[in-house]
Length: 112
Length: 114
Image 1 (cartoon, rainbow over the protein chains, first blue to last red):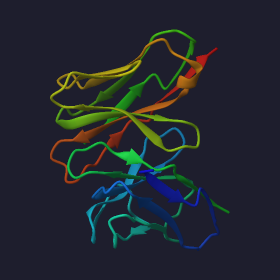
Image 2: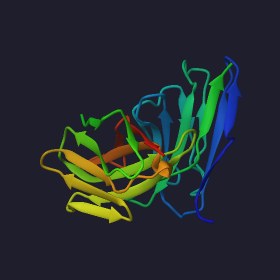
Image 3: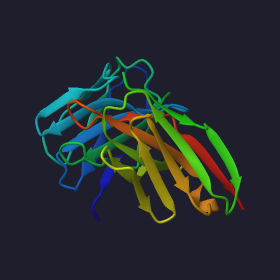
């Protein structure tokens, strides 16, 4: 089955910890994205990558970091510098250019 | 800066009713507009993608229209069913933005009562 997988489904973080969210796709898409969703709000873009070894900050990149070492993978690290990380995190991918985006099932992160 | 607004924020209808969800955007310079469905606690499912040169797209009971000059799109759902209950999100891809960056509305929560 082609698609996007995210793990874990639920993640709990203690204050001061860094945590990494996984995103893998087998759609052979060049572009990948990370979004954050808070209750009652639309999705906000954290980081995106158009090609391997290249990525750009989105609208709310502070306190987050990413890497893009493989075409299939785009992990997101939520660092201790992110003061309000409790949210639903969604990964997406698309072909190059203005193409349809496809989303993974999401990871819910909660700070204890 | 592009902003996307969806009205109403929530909608409750009886089964079988035809309904319209609205999406408006402030800047008409867009590549395309995409409608998504989101079930509680789940990811987004792409429903329809309308390119800026198109007026509408249809998939089954769904029809999405685009009026770029007025900054509006509508999602029409025919003969609604309880299984249509979900949050519906629209997103636009602004023109001249590097990368396929989408700007999302906050969504319309739809409940179809049986």
